[in-house]
Length: 209
Image (tube, rainbow, N blue to C red; front, side, top):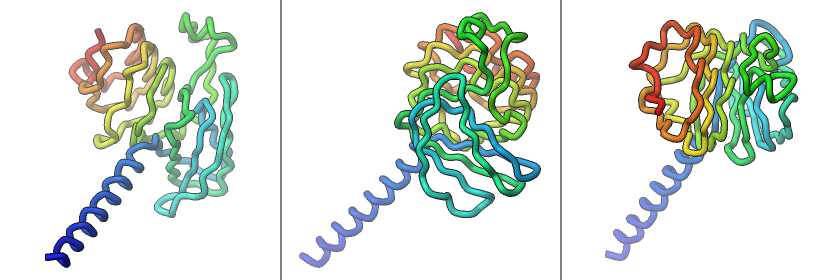
């Protein structure tokens, strides 16, 4: 009887470890990029966060720390062309913003002629996982990422603290994802969220208030 109890304890411990590992993986925000050759990839995430990346199916590299404020962008030197996955832990992650303005007022007013792309929008291909990031703003997050898509099993972003989704997918012309399950009850602003997104039919979009 004691032996069976020990076996049960070991099995429960293993299941717990596997569950913890699974939850840890789901906690990261992971994006996929495709570059044609060696280049500098500009990753437009803001905050004080940890990140790492991998090439193709190789193991992820070591964790690095970034401290990026609005108006700056993280530059990653890539030594060969191909597909890269970039993983970011949720702690300290503040915002992902592909397009910014010289002033915050330009962004607030969505004066597109006064905005400019700071990230490598041409190379972003997919959101693989939204992870456990608690998004505070999605304004201009993925704007101009023409070839962006969102993996079906990426989960849903935590928008419980987010009030702004304006122009989140502006000019994401090839985006074709089912986002109708997103919980957007607290979102107050969403103009141009899907402008120039011909494949994002109304039934695919979140039900904004």
